[in-house]
Image (cartoon, rainbow, N blue to C red; front, side, top):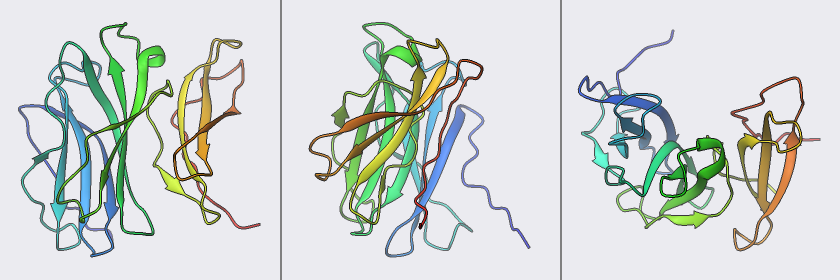
Length: 195
C-alpha cells in the first residue's frame, strides 16, 4: 500500500522541482525551488527539508541559496548521495545579465555536503550550458556523469547531452546522447545497467 505524506505546502509561493535522496544515516533530504510561478524565476531560491522518520514528518525549510537577483536565478535542483556519503546537489543557474534564455544561458552549479546535509559548500560552477540536469552520479567504474538538454544547433530541436569525468570532476567531456530533428528531447535520466 502506498502512503502519502506532505513534504511542503506553502501557498504563498510556487514550490517546484522536488528531488529526494536518502543519506547514509537514513535521513531523507528534499531539495526544491521556490519562485513566483513556473515560468518566472523572480524571487526564486533553493530550499531543503529533512525527515528523520522515513518521510512521515518534515522539518521547516532551510535556505540553500538566497533569493534570485538581477544577475542570476536557480531553476531545477537534483540531489544525490554518493557511496562515500557525500551529498551533491546539481542545479542549472540562469545568467540573467547576458540574456534570459534558459536554453542558452544556464550553466550548472554544484553544492556539496560532507556532514549529512548540515552544511553546504558554496556553489562550484560548471560551464556547461543547458537546463534541467539529471542527478549527478558516480558509476561503478568511478566515472562521474550527469545529463542536461539544450537546443541542438544543427536540428534546432532540444537534444540530450551527457557530461562525464574520469578524474573525479577535475576535467569533463561532453557527448551528445540523443538528437532527432523530429522531436524535442528533454529531461533525460541516466542509469547504470549491467552487461
